[in-house]
Image 1 (cartoon, one colour):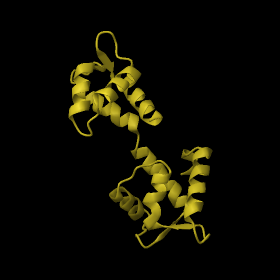
Image 2: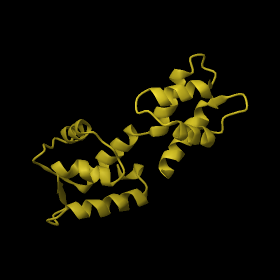
Image 3: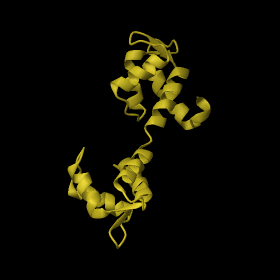
Length: 153
């Protein structure tokens, strides 16, 4: 798995792993995996962590080594591709598959569905995405802008 991660990521993961390897035996407790993953910027659910552990035949009372953590983090990072998820949601809203939706339609969805955004937050997003004079929000541009915007916050 290490060949799919950057050296900077591996170094960061190793540093965090070392903090939780309290007995200095090259292993961390499985029950701390969710904390380690969240410290590394991932946001797994408890059931996702359980699936990762099960895929490596590790139970909550068990331990895992660094190479297992690398494997789990690689898999989790692949699952958490926010730009792709946003783009997919945008494509679903773009019923005519033209590559854009109207800013007014997007605003209604963002302020009325799921984890509702404020009008101010939507204004920031639309500004970041560069809404055209025609009121269109281009799906790919918006997905990139949202990912960039959420990283800045």
